[in-house]
Amino acid sequence: MRIIAFLIDGGAIRDILTHLGEPSSPLRLMPARGPLLGESRKKDDEPVDQEDPQVERVPEYEFQG
Image (tube, rainbow, N blue to C red; front, side, top):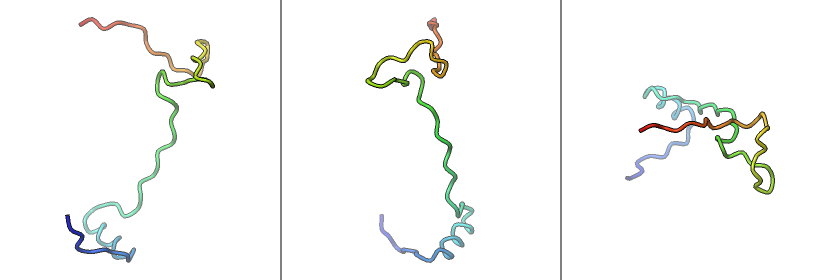
């Protein structure tokens, strides 16, 4: 791939993106999420207390295949 132009004028960049139907402003950041299932750990890597209401439980069932 070769660079054929390097644009530094913000107005020109906005005009080109608008003409191409592309967004000319950055996307919004999504809010932070909690840890994935089973990845919650207390300090020193101890297992999470089973009575902790903040921890999502993994369903206990077996797949029949």
